[in-house]
Image (cartoon, rainbow, N blue to C red; front, side):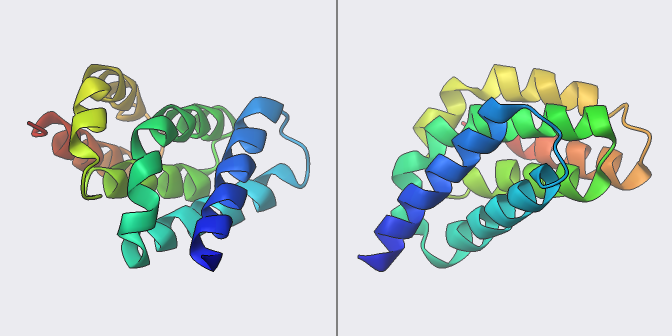
Length: 133
C-alpha cells in the first residue's frame, strides 16, 4: 500500500518536473531525486511500476531533452537508465513497442552528445529499444 502511494507521488513529481520546464536552481535536485526513485522502484517493485510504464516514457524523453540542453551528464544518464529499465518491466512491452519509433528517433539525436559516456549509454538504450518485439 505504501509503495502504491509512493508511485503516485513519483508520477506527480515527474510530471511537475517536466511541465515546469524551468531550469531553476532546485530543478536538478528535484529531477535527480525523482529519477533515482524511479530507477529504484523499477527494480524492486516492478509489479507496482509496470502499469505506469507506457505513460512515463514521454516524460523520460522530455527530461533527456532538457538535460541535453543544459549539458547535465548525470541527469541525462539517469533519464537514459529509466528508458532502459522501463523496457524490462513485466507487461510494459506492448506500451513500449507503440512508442518505439519515437524513442529510437530521440535516442539517435542523443548519440551526438558531447559526452562520450552519454553517447555510449544512448547507443545501449537505443539498441535495447530497437530489439523490442
